[in-house]
Figure 1 (tube, rainbow, N blue to C red):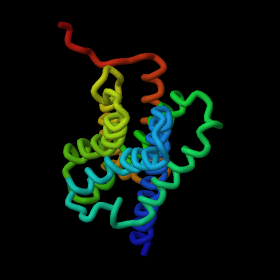
Figure 2 (cartoon, rainbow, N blue to C red):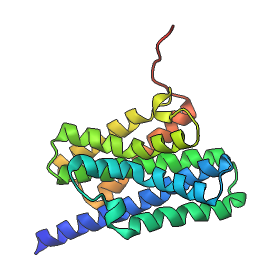
Figure 3 (spheres, rainbow, N blue to C red):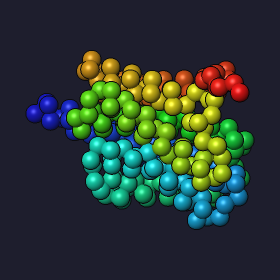
Figure 4 (spheres, rainbow, N blue to C red):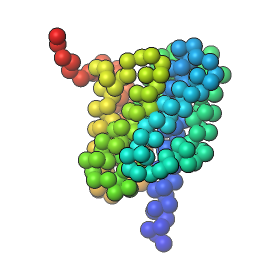
Length: 211
């Protein structure tokens, strides 16, 4: 009985974490679309893709079909509602650029955690689960940047994918140590988000090739 309760608790945490991540990444995508002066449909579409692109990729890789983005109405509705909310409330959002970066960092942390945990729960070995967790986290932001005509952040000098991969490794280690409850995983998401923001603030960057 206690084991069943732990499983239910873990599933509820993954669902809540996923939906919060969807809302955050949708808001990030919608904010970027508003900055590009797209119409309501464009804002909603970019928000939808930014929120669910990484999760769709994750589910296809681990063989979970149809992906949750299409199988569970809560995902699509959350993404669209968050995007529409940003569309109507954007005049109240100060310094839109900073808002996008903050939301993106939060989404990175949440999706790294839930993506890695879902991969591990699907029986993916630790190394593969870390890669899937990273892809889950960066997939939506990659799609958002492409749709809004920007060079994807993950391909620039900013430390982005590296943070996600490091976070996925942390989540995997915590899982091996049986620290996969809501508290430790929420702390992991906060640490990933904080590291991403710190990298932005300190202008940390990966090396680039010199011509």
